[in-house]
Image 1 (tube, rainbow, N blue to C red):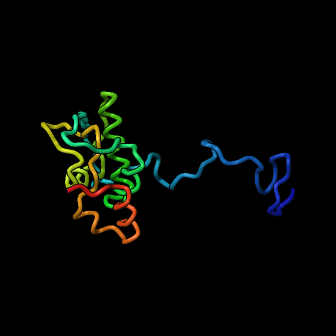
Image 2: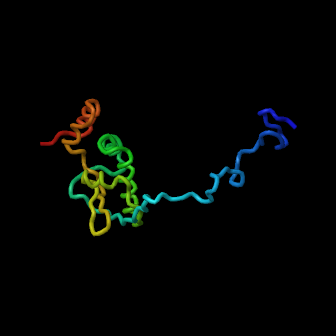
Image 3: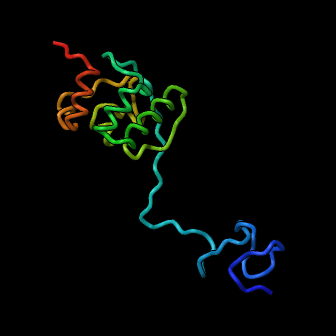
Length: 149
């Protein structure tokens, strides 16, 4: 019998050639099933509702939203916004997004009697949030959004 670290083709010996499977996985001693922490709580299910925006804006999947709103809110919040709008368009419910408080604070979502309302369009980033962007991104935003007034 070989005792070196090199596998042989018959599956016998120090190591087996095939990768581990469910039957061969190692488990923690004394633990049969993964335990859920006592402090963990299950997220509730929300019903997203799609509303027609009173102002003009961008489609949720538009490049503007992905470039500039991600810089302000972060990629997780924008991904949650996209999931909410997709669920609202298809009429299905989903677990409450982790970044919902950020979307509520930015005005991109509102709570209405246990459901979450999202607009069909996303507005331009407000000026007070544009000022938080790095200088290069502020310049790009100024070129992307014409100044009205």
